[in-house]
View 1 (cartoon, helix red, strand yellow):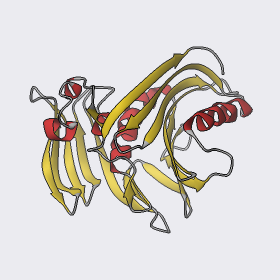
View 2 (spheres, helix red, strand yellow; view 1 turned 135 degrees about the vertical axis):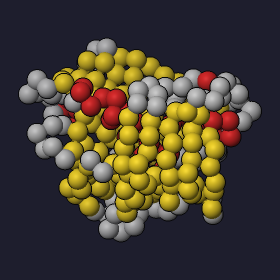
View 3 (spheres, rainbow, N blue to C red; view 1 turned 90 degrees about the vertical axis):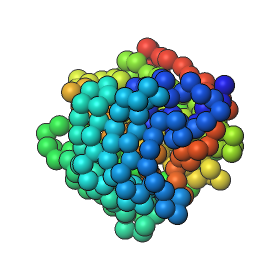
Length: 247
């Protein structure tokens, strides 16, 4: 069954938006205006029965100001429009994060309370060794193992679209070598030997907010002036897996 790629915004919280395979979720679950192909002004995302999921304002495709979230729990986040030093990364960043690293192809943010583990990484790079998503996934788990991170549970989804784009999504729960538990949300794409990835890592107490932040960034992220996820692209294949053992 075909589904709009915009489902990634709500797939973990609202299944009703996926029920109509002939329309994208944008058409059935949101109201708002576009200018030059990007969202502007007030947007309201709803389930198909009319219940509001989230609402707030856009500035040329990125979230700005106070956004209110109603499902799965009530929350609010103040978003700031952000562009890195080269202009190759444009997105919305929550006000509660502080910029720590700002490079041509990578940005790193940390939570304002440095005693807590809650951070965001967005990056892109030419790869000489990773040419497909399977290799990327293997390298991801290898890197975690190298820093003595014990994977306790992991979920992944490999997503293919009608336009030929492919993504791999992970939610990983595990334990650091200092015995602190950590949840990781990660999504990546490889295109023309260049990989793009977004990761949010947080202590379990921030899990729900981390998920909200992650799924509020990836549909409104522009890398090299192109949208990381084309919300109106059509999914042709989703393959998922679950792991509860170390890799």
